Amino acid sequence: MSSVKQLQVTFDCAEPERVARFWCEVLGYVVPPPPEGFATWDAYDRSLAPELQGASFACSDPSGVGPRLYFQRVPEGKAVKNRVHLDVRVGTGLAGEERLAALEAECARLVALGAVHVQTLRADGVNESCILMQDVEGNEFCLD
Image (cartoon, rainbow, N blue to C red; front, top):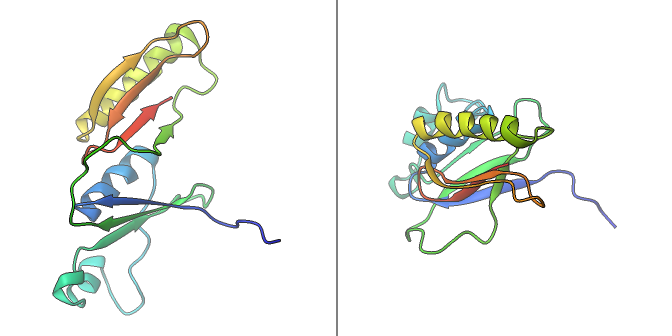
């Protein structure tokens, strides 16, 4: 039996590079170097057939710990709630008002990058506070 060595999370989207660069800012990820023989990703993209230009983009955790994120252009727009979403863990180890303050500060940073604040869920005695958000194309994620 083989075990999983790596995990990639794939996003369907309209503008792969735009969404990828948003997530780079959220997670501190980086865009990998362009393929050999190309000085930039733009130069590589221009070498592709017109229908493939801008069709995908990727970013990765510079530490190599987190999963690679891959963004692919699809013709249809987002229509329903995600069945899977990312939890951005900014409040780990914090509780109460200290946790909520950390979540709200990160929410403000991400809104400035184009994210949308959907709802703040306050601690209820069972679950700690979290903030529901959407990325630049409406994909749901949580600040947790």
